[in-house]
Every structure is written in C-alpha cells, then in structure tokens.
Length: 368
Image (cartoon, rainbow, N blue to C red):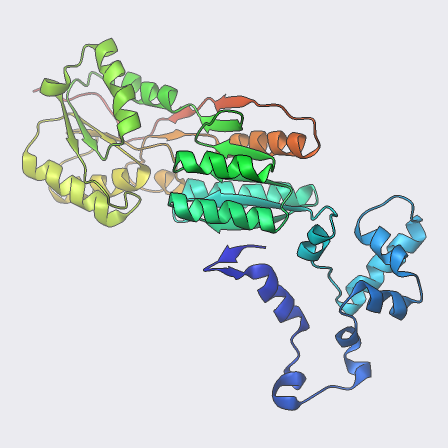
C-alpha cells in the first residue's frame, strides 16, 4: 500500500479487484456471475456464510477464540469472493491495522530503493503491509508522517531526517519510529558508519601512495570528517586537495557527474586520485576521463561512494566502492521497530560497519 502522487495504491488495488467491465456504462452482470459485488462489508460476508458478524471480526483481527476450522472456512470464503477488509477502517475502530510506513527521499538512488524494498519484504514476512512515501523536503516529510499517523500505521521508518521540525512531528504522533541514516534524541536509529567508511577510502588511497586528491561532489558533514583524516595523514587541504561541486543540484544524476568531471579536467589539477561523492559520479567521471585519454588506474585512481552498485562489477575497470551492507541495516531497523511495536523496545543507536570493496579503478599512485 504505497502512496504515489497523492494516490493510495491500496485504493487503486481495491478498484482493480472490484472493477468489472460489465458494470461500465450501465452494463451489469447477473448475480450468479459476480458473487463478490454484494459482499462489501463484514456484515455482508457474515450473511453470505450464515455466521455471526462477531465471528468474522474475530477472524479478521486474529483473535485466538475462534476454532481453526471456522477460521480456515472464513479465510477461504474471503478469498473466493474477493473480500478484503480495509485496514484504514480497522484502525478507526481501534484494532491493529498491520500497517507500517517508510519515508525515503527518493527511489532513484539504488541504496534508497533497496532499503524501501527490503523493508517491505521483511515486514510482509511478519504480516505487515507497507505504506511508502517519497519526500525530500521537511514539508513533505511532515506530510508523510501525518499520513502514517492518520492511516493508523503501527510504526514507521524515516530515512534521512531533513529538519528539526520532523522530530517534533514524530513526537506528536506517539508512533514507534526508527530513523535511518540520521539521529535524534529519544529515537532509535540505524546508520552506516560513514566516518569509518571515509577513513577506509582514505587509508586505501594513502596505502597506494596517493597524496593529491580531487573530490567530485561534497557535503558539509563529509568535509568535517575528511578534514580530520587529512590531519591524520598529514595532507594539507590548501595544497593537496581540491573540491569540484555545485550547490543545490541533484547529485545522483549522470549530468551532475559529467559536469563536475568536466570542471576537474578543465582545471588541470594534477591529482593522482579522485574521490566521488557517490558511485554515479564515479562511473560517469571514469568514462569522461577515458574519453579525454586518461587511463584509470594507471594515470589516476577513482573511488566511488557508499552504494556499491551492482553495475560496479560489470564495467571496466570495476569501480572501487564502499558497501554499506544495506541488508544488515534494514534487518537491524526492522528488529528495532518490531520490538517497539510489541512494547519491548528502548532507544537504541546502531552503527553498521561498512566494507571496502576493492576493484580495478584504484591502483598505485603514478610517479611524476
């Protein structure tokens, strides 16, 4: 049950299930050909089966007072007639909805898309349906949180908090929440250990003899960490480092990667290693350098971001990258969320150790 452009996919699904071409433009089927048309509520189902409405309600809500034979009969009939109770209606009556939500900034980034998909699959295995919201601003995130709350979702995951106002909105719902790739007081969170990932990048390149770096794309939080790493390795930022980046532009985009790679080439900066903000930029930059006659890794090494995209294994040379271990992150997040939903959770922060995946795009620094 996802939300796309303000439309509930759940509603679209129900429409698709109940739609019959014979009913369009006044054409109606006979009652025998459409047994489910008259069964639109638990009361209708109870009359159809000759049982009490209480029995139907007990089965739908998973109560144990109903015998296995009766439960199986009710569920079988529900499948046969195509009856599916609305979780939203159950929520309004105070029953558990078996709904959870996840809010991600976009679904174009492979890691974010994977996180949303894995969350849906993992929660489905525990009997939950998932509402998915795409929100890349504080305003949209607050709207997503309100949607989860009004839908009576039993819990939610928020990826990359955009604003302090989000925390207040989360507190106001009282809903169990786990944060991904961000932290806030009184909320459980799961993140890739990004400072460790950046240290792995630098250590790898330093061990290969690199001392002059070009960064393609940069964020304020990463720059703070890199400055500490420069001190550790006695790299002088003003002398040994240059950043090629554009503010307020989509960075998971081939055009952006080409733009910053072109700026790097035009600068004639004599770096021996490139550190890309993400794998998209790394792949595009590698191709742009190849077209300019620059060999990777013989002339210059390139290391990607934290995505470890599948395509990295199928290009030549393969792109060295950081694997943030998305499956481990999502498994941990789901465990924390389920514990909270069941009333057994407490505020916990988990940093998942990433893995450096070495491929052919990094090699020994060239000798000048």
